[in-house]
Image 1 (cartoon, rainbow, N blue to C red):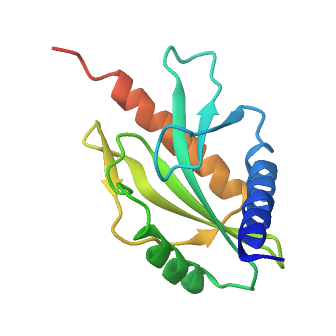
Image 2: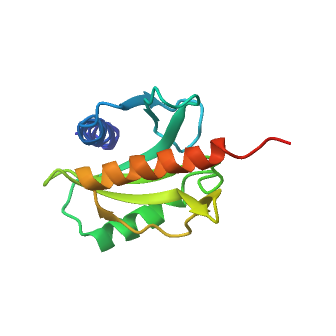
Length: 158
C-alpha cells in the first residue's frame, strides 16, 4: 500500500467511525466543509424550535496504532500546527481523533462555545485536551452548542 493510499484509507475509515458516532443522534446532519480550510465537516443540529441554523465544525484525524488521551493530545497539538488559520473560527469547532485498531475516538474543543455573564463567547484553546468520545460527550457537546446559539440569538442588534 502506498503512503497516499494508506492516508486515504485512514481518512475514509475515520470518516466512517465519526459518522457512526454522530448519527446515533437523529438531529445531526453531516456535510463536507469544502470551502473552509482545515475543517473537514460542518455538523448541523436540526431543531424546528430554532429560527437559525445551528452548526459546528469538525476536524478529523486518525492513527493506526493504539493511543491514550495524552498521546492523542500530543498528536493533535503537532498536527494542528499544519492547518492554516486553525485558531480563527467564528463558530464552535471541535477535534475528533480515532484510533483505528480499537475503533476508539477522542474529543477536544478547538473553539469552545461558552456563556459568561449571559454573553456568548468562543474560547479558542491553545492546546487540545482529549477525552474519550462517548455518546454522553456528544450529547453534552450538542447541548452546549444549542445553549450558545440561544445566547447569540438573544443579543440585540444595534
